[in-house]
Image (cartoon, rainbow, N blue to C red; front, side, top):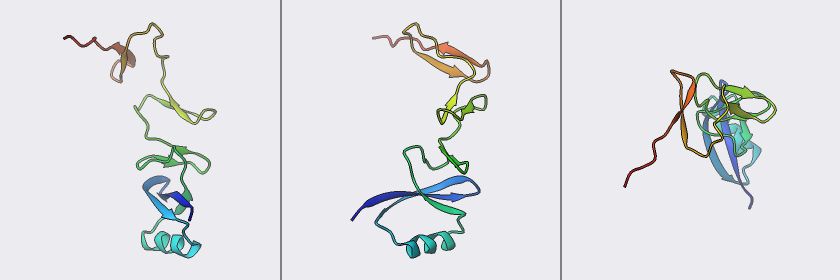
Length: 106
């Protein structure tokens, strides 16, 4: 039996991910009707509950309101590049900038 993950889609949102052992078309149709789903699709690693399906790609949840979809990579891009100085940063949405995360003290 081939185990496979399926994304349950309603209003373009992934509302559930289910794993089946080789499901029949009638079983998938039953779930679609019973749960009032728009689609049930084979899930990729990018399909996550709360993410979306745009008709072509699965998108993870948008990390921050200012981040935008990169249609080429299928990832969310930040409006400012992550600093490349080796330090650790966290995104700060109110200031739209990367803030230095202090090193832990012992």
